Image (cartoon, rainbow, N blue to C red; front, side):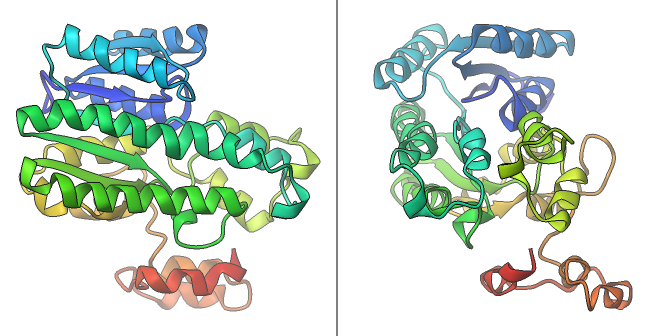
Length: 312
């Protein structure tokens, strides 16, 4: 129970990665507030947390509404005597829109796709971070985690997606600068491909919409992807790191934290390191056979990964 007594908030936790994070935080002993727009799915997640022996408090909150966010933090402040130890900015509403518009260029889609992808993501992350930081700074400790992706480094899905993820990364980096002397850390976390409910529906299912079809190689990567709880395992280990402040302002992939803490996914599988030369070779049809001869410890510098964009 390494996080016993911690007060945590995970936004967008009624399913997917957010749900997985909430499950792992609660298993570690934390009291976890979770948000979402649908009462039914929120209660289902809370019930699953309770069945595992954790404590979860579901709160209906529309992350596009500033008043809802303000009321959420006011409630936590009153119920927990002003304490908040960990905020995970995970709320996101763009997955279905991304796949329904798969293959379309930015000028071929309605401009409102920007708001669909980035209001419940980027904008709400900033607002939640403001309220959380006020509580954390007052106590001189805390951790803010932005759930982002490799789309912040190289083209992935579409223009609004990439810009939003790059901004989430930059937000964590810049928040860390202003929070450093206050004992509060901020990081950005890139999960690998995750086999969530929506990915199963829009990518892996035989009934997936035609417009959502993706290359077979990428489909295979998702089929063998991380569990939704993998990011939660990583965040629990990060939160209890005695050198947490030295990590503030950094961008981590789940495989980075797996390597740092020696952890595996909840199903026992090793967490795939997408930066290894061995893995990257497996994604290149004509030279994939070379991967069996390459040691797994050889990694590509992250800034070079966009050069391989055409192979994914």
